[in-house]
Image (cartoon, rainbow, N blue to C red; front, side):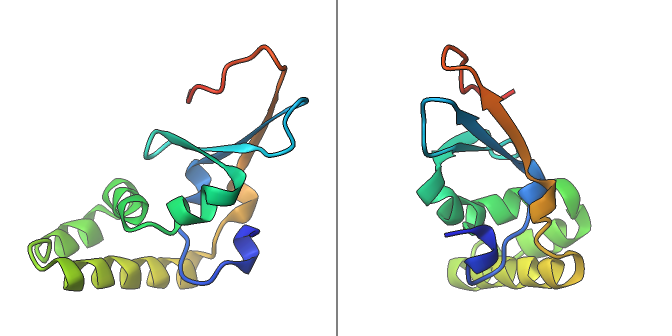
Length: 114
């Protein structure tokens, strides 16, 4: 699925790097805030994950993160609050799909996160 077609909030796409190569049909996505790589079909799972949202909140929305972390011991409520915060941010700022950086690598290049 394309990021536009996904249900639920998505934040932190400014930390996404789409990496393609001439020999691969599916791009690899890197999340520089979480320091992980994933294949195209799995990108939505990551960018909609609670862990990714929490890292983006911690990095870019520190006061909101500090407010939310107080509820961490109540797991179910905490996950819902993180998702609600992400939904509010997405409503305010959008998904920022245009912020995804793209790189095309030669077949001999590495896919490491830079």
